Length: 214
Ligand code: PRT
Ligand code: MG
Image (cartoon, rainbow, N blue to C red; front, side, top):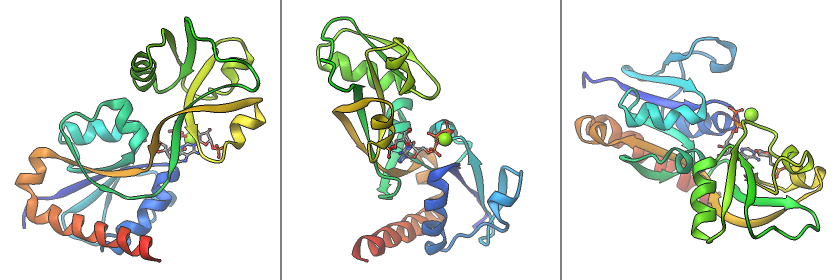
């Protein structure tokens, strides 16, 4: 097998849960990812390399074929669009929910809602589908601050325990989508590198199934 295989991993919280799954599928980085400032890593498997990048860049790398396989949150895939990517495995890690949220006890405005979020595409689609006219404002972080500062009426953000919302006087409202981490594959690579990708998919599926059974 001559062709090399490049896996794009999301850095941050997803990485910590991805590495044990990859190890169970037989792939371990040749060096400690967190102790290094490098971005491209060899692994124990000849011809298999890892890149560790911003989660939001993972779908782009895989879509354009710079990476063959990627691991990213469904929230990131929904926002990107992830057109032309296969999404064969739900890794069932880093689970959370994409939700709308607003200030506790305040009736949600129903006309010309201002919504702050980093998920602008998801938000536009969601409110349009609800028949709600919304002005979507792009933020890069700390969405919870926006209603408090009178920048927005609602936010669209990731919710896990809801503690972050509550600590900022907000409440979760509508569920947009349940989220977990997905393994995605470039469509051309799925065909051209099938003999390399197939055992990886089988290994990852088996690892996920073992977790579920445990
Ligand atoms: O830092 P950067 O801008 O690069 O991205 P990031 O901070 O979003 O990355 P990171 O490392 O936090 O990982 C994000 C990915 O993990 C998301 O794309 C999700 O798929 C997944 N995930 C799972 C979460 C959470 N759980 C989560 N709780 N991502 C973010 N959160 C944050 C959320 O944004 C909010 O601030 O945690 C807070 C909510 O948690 P609770 O428990 O207070 O409700
Ligand atoms: Mg972060």
